[in-house]
Image (cartoon, rainbow, N blue to C red; front, side, top):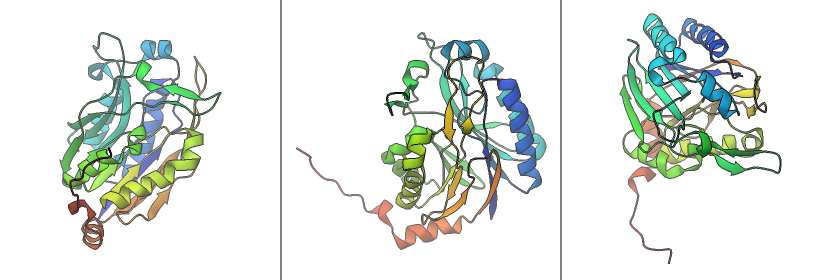
Length: 278
C-alpha cells in the first residue's frame, strides 16, 4: 500500500512566498505517512503577466523551488511530483517551459515532462487563455519507473487528449498524474468527468493535485482556479476530493487494484486497426 498526498495550493505570483507554503505542506504530508507527494501545476508562480514572469522566473538550473524540494525529498525520504514549474528556457522566441518533475528520495530528478498540449481557448467574452503565447509545448510522453509503480506524467489541459493516457497505460503506467490549474468554468463542468474517464479507460490510478481560489498578484489580472484536487481509482471511483481550501489530502493506493480493473475490462488489449473516416 502506498500513501499519496495531494497538495492543493492558492499560489501567488511570488515564487519565494509560494515555496514557503509548499514546503510546509510537504512536511505535513511526510508527517502523515505519505511516501508520494504531489503538488499542482505552476507550483512556483501563478501569473497572467508575461512581463512579471520574465522578472521572477529562472532557468531550471537556478530555480529555488526545484532546489528546495529536491533537498526536502532527500531529507524526508519522499517521492515528490512537482506538478509543474514555470521556467525560462533558451528558446529564441523567449517562451517558457511548463515542466513537471519527479523527484526521488535521494533528491535526484528521476523524470522531467514538458506539458504537450497548450491551453489556447476562449471560454467566454471575459475569460480567454493563450498559453502557447508564453509557453512552448513539449514533444515527448514520459513514463517513469519507481518502486511505487510506473508513473505516467501529464499536466492539466493534457486531460482532454485521451490518446496520450492510453499510450502511457499501454506502455505500463499504473499511476497517471494530472497536476492542474483548471479554470473555474471548465472545472465545474468537466474536471471530475474527465479524470474519471481517464481512470476508467486506462485502469490506472489518476492523481490530480490542483491550484485553487483567487491568486494574489502584483501585476496583471488575478487568476482564479477550480481547486478540487482529486484521486480516482482504476475502476473509476473518486477516492478523494479536496474541495476548495488549500491543504493536504491523503489517499492510500493499492497497486493490485490496477491489475484487477484491467482484468475485468481488458480494453487496453483490444485495439483494432480501422479505416476512415473518409
